[in-house]
Length: 324
Image (tube, rainbow, N blue to C red; front, side, top):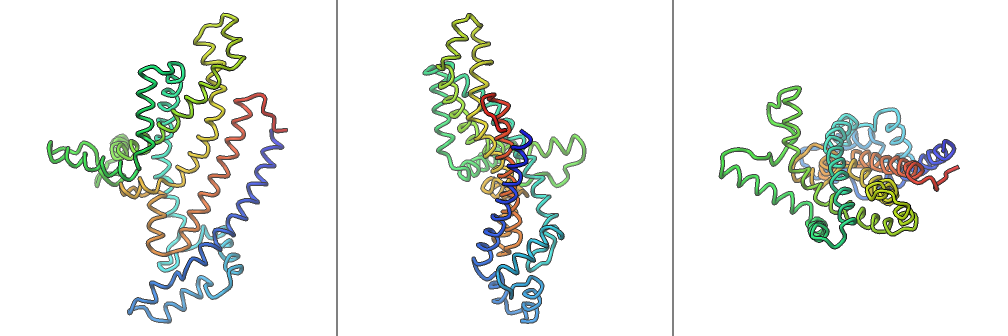
């Protein structure tokens, strides 16, 4: 296992280097980052020349890539192009906010999605199965931005009718959230609607995968053999079927967790959450390539790391898998 992990780490480092060059090249040639600044009448040519020289924009792509890598390794991803602000503090703040949302969402999605999928498989074609299937199709069909907007409309109408905020429709915290337990409760209250949006599609996806995996496993020979030996049905389902049915779900969990940590762009933008998604949107609106490249490098790193964790989890869930 150790040899496999080291080999995968070296391979991941190589992929990350290649990805960094591709990211830098594609973002750099996408357009002139100073085009908007050049159109401003109050901006002098001297200011533009200083920004160009400071960021080496007059050099070729390879030289600029070398300076960018140096800044990423020694200067915390460097500074923004125009405002000359450090990128990493804003990126870390946004990542921390996104992790708060994603961790809770992922735990709830796993619990409800796996439970619904298992029960649907064990009670195939029952009323519960048909109901879960119907709601899972609705979860797949509803666009995230539409559901987020509808929840905001319902929360606003509830406030107009009752005079009380049932759920906040924007931001991570109140103006004066307090501290300690009060801060945690206020943060959880503000994240309720975004969590609902993430959970709708996530539970639908996980429940369908889990149902299909369980249906495939419960008819396997080793499960029938365990049942024929007289083992209790609960032990057959949980010890023999459930563990093996989790294996296909591991890939989905690993990839989706890396994706979610990169920032749920639509959800965070609609609800105005200061996370990775909104960080990307603001960088794109500002036309600043360096925060965009920093965001993309974080995403690439997360995907590589969670792919490695997924492969390691395979070895523990399925003894037939051998890495060395």
